Image 1 (cartoon, helix red, strand yellow):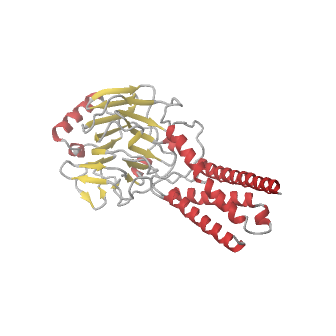
Image 2: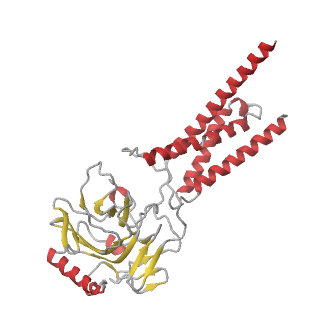
Image 3: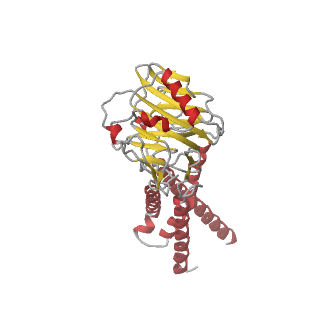
Length: 380
């Protein structure tokens, strides 16, 4: 094979591997781009299917209140399943930092109420956990209060869990303050089910009032009865206005239902977690990131070897740098893609995989060359 043909072959292989890396690095993982949120006018609810999101971009009426202050969150939900592993966010209030967010999550049949991102509870941060709260396709009326008596969780008007020494707080340090339903601000977490109504009031309701409100909801099966009470935001999901639902409290916190699934908070090259959970999925993802860039490193190295001068003499270094830049481009774009996660760890693993592939390729070539020399010597 002459030099021109060899260079042309390596160039085609390199272009092919780059396109493959871009395809697998930038494609959506399993979920469609369309926002899977559907209005159910007959039941006055919105249904989250597959990957969906509903949000308020900035709750100004809430953000401008002085802290601390008591509040109550009320909502009626019907989960689609209780068997799915992992956290599924029903409601999140986010001011730009995960460590401060207010999160109400479903975990299998349980409900978890907390501030921050201590999902696996390794940091032992305060939370309220209602165990065995949910059954598939069974509607629950949830009330979460925070005030002088700590944080209380009621299910169908009945106390389910409490932490009297801790107050749940609405994050106020950053801006904007976003309300997200059925997903996280990162657009990469999914809750599936029906939301029949939602209210936020600026007081911690008593147990008697919580019970009375549940009884009224159980009779009417809608949130219209809360229109007469002071609320900071209220969604009854009737009627719908194009791609939004009006805030019935009159504070202008209209709920957006975009046509396409979007990422509200873009994280670029997220740092490696201090407490990394080395489970099967994490190990599999690490292996894919390393192995996937082994052939990319080889083809870049092979192409650079076709040239003369510094490109050939330092082909290993240049090939690793080119692979790192390719991985960096992929990670930067992933920050804007729903269901993908821009991670510094992936950049490091991709670069290591490229280096590993080049070193392995050089060792194979050296052993092959030594074998050929020995064969020639034996014939001589």
